[in-house]
Image: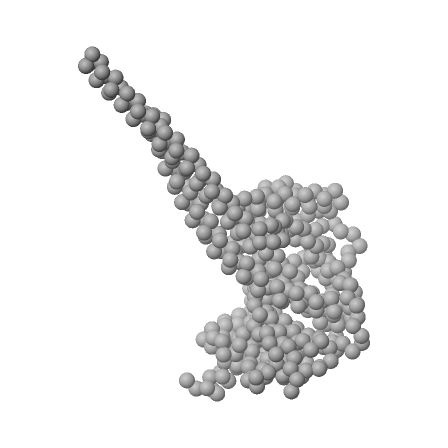
Length: 141
Length: 288
């Protein structure tokens, strides 16, 4: 299968850059699959999982926050607010931040309460937990 | 003999100052390397989002985002200033302050009121004292500890100020790194977003949900990124400037201690020669 280039970048780092054959991403309207030669596209993505099959045949999974995806001239760029390989997820930290986000949402009083921020934090934590748990089930230590 | 003692004291002082400046030079060099790496790591994202803005904007209309709205009349401008927390970094601080003051004068001449949003304790101190200028935001923590999240929060506040109409323009004074050794302060317009001159690349560009929807989310994100990149770049410049200042201070101390030890040796030698002459003179006189 033909390859195309994928760049997964966050404000602080380039998480992945390389040739892939297939890609699925959490577009806002539903999961989106991309192969080489896809028509030019730009869309928004929600927190979720990006799965890529590398040119070598290996499958890799990444956690991404909200952001944008653009496909143009056989190069796919994913710009996400946060992102990391699924096997680098810190489950304990994700659990703590889920708990914190839920508490904040429950107690949402206070003047400087930022609903959007708390919801975004919760969404990220939930995705991290799901990905992290999936992995640890597949490969029990 | 007084001269010798005095010289020795000064020599000691210069040497201990050199130790301090050398240590500060090393610290600045280490931090500089780390900050340069951080600044460079933001480049791929910054470049990608810029390209995306241009391509999507070509398909969107002017009402897509309030950030595109050109105000009929500008009454007030918010100036975001990226300064330093400390001194001892050469002309870095005064360059930033001078450039800002020039910009503020220009605004005054246009009849535009100004308010400042300031990073850096030094800059905050400087602008807080200025009469008729509102210090709207003072970044509470050290500039070098800045995180993307903090900058994103600030960007949200700036967008809110712009959307509610409390300011009609937002600009940024920072320092750009031209090469590793040259940097200069710069003024950059942030809001309203100048409509990028993108050419619509055919009609087969799929946009989901639609161009306006994407742009409405893309522009605030782009602002966050511009701010973050500007802060990191200014920080790298600050530490480059600090390293250089400490290096020349150490070099000067080196030269001075060389000069002083030469003077000290000369003075000591002439003291010894003088004493010898006296002894010899005394002995000759006794021998008669």
